[in-house]
Image (cartoon, rainbow, N blue to C red):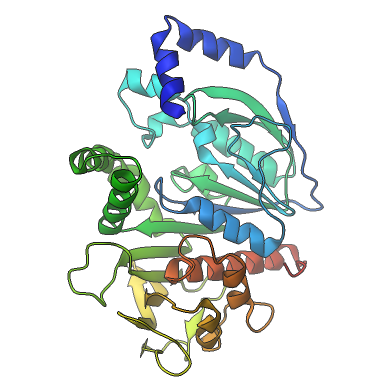
Length: 379
């Protein structure tokens, strides 16, 4: 669908300018979300195709409700609304549309393709409890659509490529997360998707990754050192020379000494633990499961690291692992397992990506409650 629309735009002389003019004159969409206090702002940074959408749905599930696009608004809106949260995609702050980027020969990752001034202005206004008219980047047409009105929610999540790049925006964020998918895993995922589902050749996949890599390395990847927590997805160490990317080793890197959250730990806080729980209480098929916990340093800062390598055979048995985790910010015994079972059809639910995304979601809820001094209703 996207390809056919883009072809139509390119095929008509002057259609690009005409489309922009028509969209600029269209009526604005109003998105109304009531809030009883100023929003808590959460920032999530990651490259495209790294699981941000799945992560967003895990977070909103913990706060209650199912995220939906604005009712009656632009069908191509990137905004997601639920009971307490509003998720804004920072692609909406592209200063150049797809055709403008092509004219200037820049990628969507380049800073010159972003309107950081408007991004900072609107995030600040929302945090102060004021509504904003936020632009919409249309991923189908590649154009900038007319804005939609966003009311301040209780929890504002800004997700995208550059949430920590601009200092003005970064200073408005109360809690920050970075999804760090290793090159090997990205490559394996992209091959599985683009070759099996889209018929792309291996050569074209490699070319696409290489074309994007310089800007990713320059502008996106450095943001991870600014995050409070990093979810790092790596190839397994349980299978020598594995290149399929189906079994994953996932690390949750948690900065120490932060006022708004306490790092989760396994068994004994501050110790170094290596644990293979397979046995009577946890079913494990090849290659098994291995956990690790211990202190470390990350870009010169002290951190605690939780790690899971492998996959669960029976998700309900996660309760055994959960019973050995502390400082999870859960409200009751088994809440992590309950959340994982509730969203068991989501990608990553059987491995460390789902486990640590859920744990980070609980931390976000805890951050909200610490800032607002209000308890959330159990989801």
